[in-house]
Image 1 (cartoon, rainbow, N blue to C red):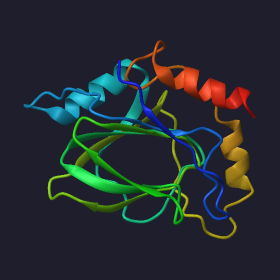
Image 2 (cartoon, rainbow, N blue to C red):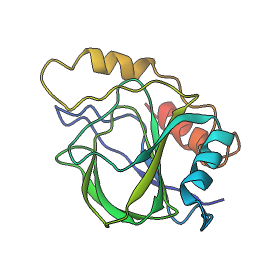
Image 3 (cartoon, rainbow, N blue to C red):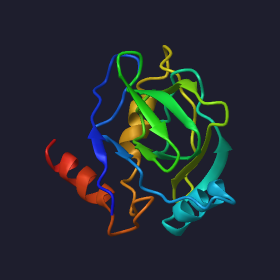
Length: 173
């Protein structure tokens, strides 16, 4: 079981970010060479992260106030800014997975020509798309606080590190 990097982000005034850390699982998934996107989707679906899609990551800062999100890189690589305009940049490549708590800003800063990612949501939650614009808050903040903690880690299910890590962070508040 791959232990994820933990990266916390505080509210920057526009992007709310989260009380939970972003989790990056490096080299966590051995992808099927014939259909790597399906390999990623099947892994997420087995752990109840559904309502999936395949594409890239938007090239503008955005966040979701109605769901946490998992992004699984199945092809190529990208540099992603997490945490909003004042956040941090991370290089991700095929086989790596990012769990983004509701409220955390993310943006594609540049990707390889054949970059591909699968996105999914715990228990198939519906997601919105917010950009840190005036008027989004306080409703976005209320939405984020109402989202339950996922019952499953998107890679490892109920025994995975997500619940333990996020549970400890919540206890520290």
